[in-house]
Image 1 (cartoon, one colour):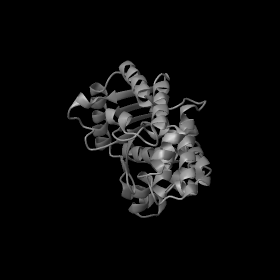
Image 2 (cartoon, rainbow, N blue to C red):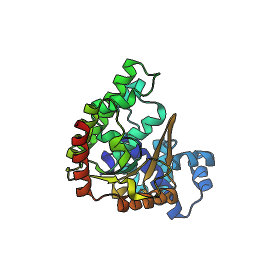
Image 3 (cartoon, rainbow, N blue to C red):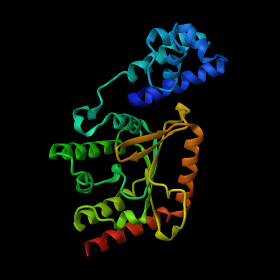
Image 4 (cartoon, rainbow, N blue to C red):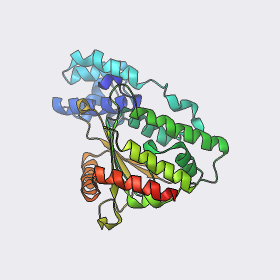
Length: 287
């Protein structure tokens, strides 16, 4: 259900569907702006999800678009989108502004498709592996490290939530399995954890072998967030960077990443072979 999604996803849904309703009604952004007595930029900001409309403006817009009967439904969504009680708000040192959006979108996603060239995805990390990777930043305090580990582990609750756990499809470059983080014991435990998680019915893990040759993931890791079908949302791509993150929302750009993901899935070992490979890698790491 859309109404039970995270605030970030609700905000995105409202933006997408107000734009769609305006387009279907044959109105320009200038028409919508005139109806609520504001500038065209105000409509631009609403339709790209930068701002939420007021309840009064929402009612006026839905009336203009010919669907006043949907006002109560949209008001419920608006109320949910304004909520600020995210579980991670107590971990302020671990959540920069750009990552707050990521967490909100991730929490409301129905499926996450990722290609990882260097690291195990955060949702599949053990606490020890997570700490070893986080300690790579020498500027972090011990409290900052603790909060980031807690945050990463807390994010994993979406794998076990009661209302439709998220589906995961992860393609890992083979080098991820051999690039030691922490000690060999930490790495062996991480690989064993991957092997166990790969047997979960809602989690697919594939290993992209060194022999795969050239592919569309050569430019780096990415994560495609897909949302419930009733949202009619093309999805969003998140690319992690050293000092922030970048999001691709244009449908054509998202589709390009989806094609890349399909190619990587085709080139990678199948899920059963990948499970065997993970088990072997874990045993070898322990020797």
